[in-house]
Amino acid sequence: MHKYILSVMLLFLLLVGCASIEKSDLAYWSEMPILEPFKKGERVLILAPHPDDEAIACAGVIQQALKAGAKIRIVYLTNGDHNELAFIVYEKRITVRQGEFVHMGKVRQQESIKAMKYLGLPEEDLVFLGYPDYGTFNIFSQYWQTKKPFRDRLTRISSVPYKDNPSYGAEYCGESILDDLSRQILNYKPDKIFVSHPADVNVDHKSLYLFLQVALSDLEGKIAKPKVYPYLVHCVGWPKPRHYHPELELRPPDKFIDSEISWSRADLSFGELDKKYQSILFYKSQTQSSAFYLFSFARENELFGDYPPLELAPQQTLKDKVISYFGASKMFKDAPGVDTVEGKTIEADGQVSYAEEDSYFVARVDKPKKLSNRFSVLLYVFGYSRNTAFPAMPKIRIITAGKKLRVFNGQKRVVNSGVIFEFGRNYLVIKIPLKLLGEPDYVLTALKAFHGNLPIDAVGFRKVKVRK
Image 1 (cartoon, rainbow, N blue to C red):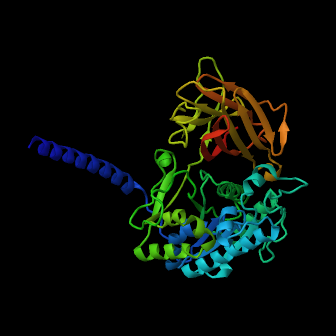
Image 2: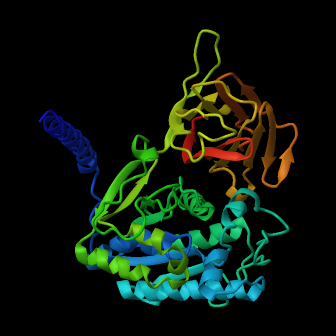
Image 3: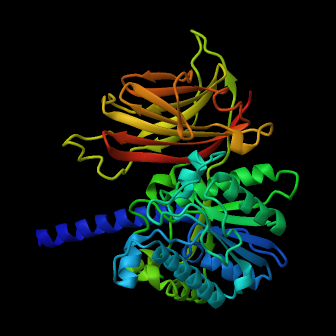
């Protein structure tokens, strides 16, 4: 009898606990804004890093926009020709021939054409630029005003190889991508732009967001400012569970729930969800190796959100005044492998924040416990100025290793950089002269953290305005 009563009590407590969790969870979800409805005649631009990103992230909004009478154009940054695993599984053979990779890019292009036609978009509304899959971030960070364009290590190609693409023959360099993207935006004049997320771990997804930010800054005053809706695809351990779960909602990764990202959702009808699932099936070259992952995006809704621009106030260093830091982003929380680095626990809940101090742009990393000498960071800082063409602006990359530091501008190392580096017990501070950054109006910055050679975590790219 006592065991029965105890069992009932435990069950009651479990149900109460679950109910409170679900209630809290539902409250968070119910407060998330619904994506603004589309309007007749509205011009919608979807930017996809690879063929299939437009379907897994935006197939629902594509259908909703078309139903509302909006116009849609999709621009693909790459043809996705660098996916070796997908090639092996799909073609059932291993190859190192240049033409075979181009062949895979053509296959993926045709898959997108068929998938989008199924959703109601004709081929003439699809633009394939054909830049190097898995190479566009290297181009953004290092290949501007260079005599030698980027050369893909796998395909061994240094210019767009697809004869039917509008960018055919364009060199793999920053100017080519920026010019092509700017031209597409200027000609189309979109009201809304859907683009890959700045916190996405895939390098092409990051770079497309960065190229868009620069293009929109260059086009300021030439077109009406469009609304931008970033979508997230690649985030470690997300979404879960894998496979097709149409009964589930697509919610932000846990690491972003308490962040500054303003999320919104587009709820899908049963018919829209089914058509999204069916559209993903057209990407046979990808589903044969990654169906469990791609289908996990076919859920009750789609997600969009971005960090707000961060504006820094100039400050002066005084003995009796503490410098204020802004835009704190959490790090090391739920990072893969943080509990298994050489058998030692890597602390959670560190953060990265920014400041402007004495004509320096400052990035600070804080940790709750002592920093190891094996702790290192990779910091990107790309400045934008209305007074200097972006290709001529410095592309700064800073690498620390313990208490040592190296500074690069594009592909070249900067010896006398003027960068100040502080390595404290619980913090790391990097102060970069605004002059080194080209006296920017704003910077696009992100940081990765490592313990030895093992990546710990990263913060996505932030747009940080500088008030000089």
